Length: 220
Image (cartoon, rainbow, N blue to C red; front, side, top):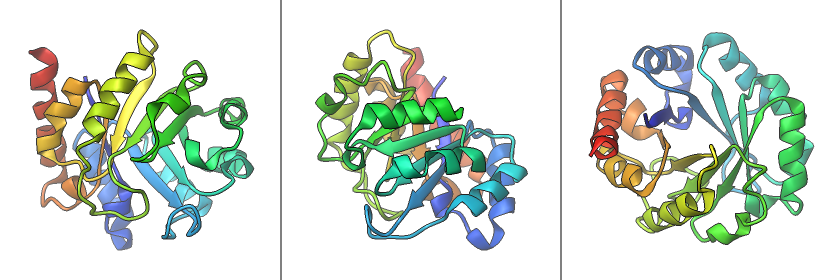
């Protein structure tokens, strides 16, 4: 079954606890939490204290996506704050295998994200060290961007590279209901969605519709 990960970057931060409760009740599989430092990407978001607060309000796994420079300096901090899965960018890690090992040693699952212009081949020697690969279908830094169609081909390539490994293949950026079926067909196992869920009057219904659209393909 495809997993749906609402991205809290699109939630109302003035009522974040309520927004999280609604998507948890609506069937979300995990929460996607974007951390931006204003250097690796041109925006600032949240840090460890907010993640600690989120951890206290939900039983959902926290998928923490570090869009920051020198992520290896912050691994233990974010795992202690409550990250169940910690994803770093291949472009930000001069020694990605070491960083992935740090994440696992700290007690979290390890993920690697690829920007739209980064080819899948950078992961050729890391495939046995990752629990999740995150394909960015927008250029990272801001919510509300339009989906980049070249992500479909990248997902297909990565599905072939992953082979029989149990690695999750996630896609993040501009995803709406109409993207769910082709992404599932290409081999994605996790769909990260922000405005498509939190911008809906009924977030739970938006989650169910996105999952339903993807499962039609999986069952075909």
